[in-house]
Length: 345
Image (cartoon, rainbow, N blue to C red; front, side):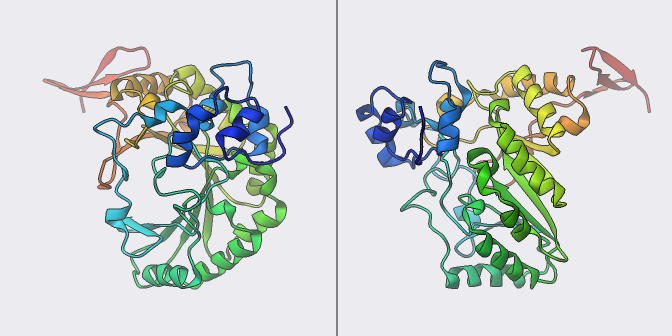
């Protein structure tokens, strides 16, 4: 089915052949933002009930089930927000959220109660000035991570203007953009937009959120190539999701393909305790078993860091199981053969 406009309501999803009962999803749409780009809608296989793109973006009534452990702000953005649009959790870096909207809304989003029309909006000029003044006044901050929402929702002109303002902060060394756009609407990542990301005198990185090999379309690869060939290093973020990528085969296929596309796997996130997302979560034990198997199958270049964000925003915790055990005579080291080998330093 040819989809020409973003799908932003249950009725639109039904018209596109993605859901059968639009009325059943009205309560979900009232609670959480909904949008699927025409590009992604066309990539969903209507005949596959386990289609990974559909599972990530098409809403479900399971989202109305909120478990006791779930939190509206699971990683503590608000507790670490000194001014609007800034999250300062680590000493040497801050998050800057210039926009609060996205081209698509992931059904597992940890900011799902903070983003979307009417929830998160673009910072006003005065709010952006205040956010930048906060960064400028803290010489220990060397990196700004642009997130949101999705900062690639900015036009090329506005992205360039934001980069120019960041250039004026002398102690700032690194600008990192976090985005879903190369997956959701890759044709928006034009050559003009890529040029707008380049900031003289600063190191610019782009981190692409991608969870399954099916998201790495030819168009997405071309968007990534435009950035890579402009000299922008590319990273990836992946969330470990039940029913999407919770197998070593799915993750290995994705990580290898990312490296081939010049995208360095950076983080594998254990799913956060966002409300209405319990159906996506795997246990920590499951995640560690998958990660251990992945570590034995792919090269170090293709292996992301497996992490859990500590609720409340303290920091990330390393979730990878250790290969080292203490012994009476030194240590035992786990090899990829599954055996423990003695090590006596």
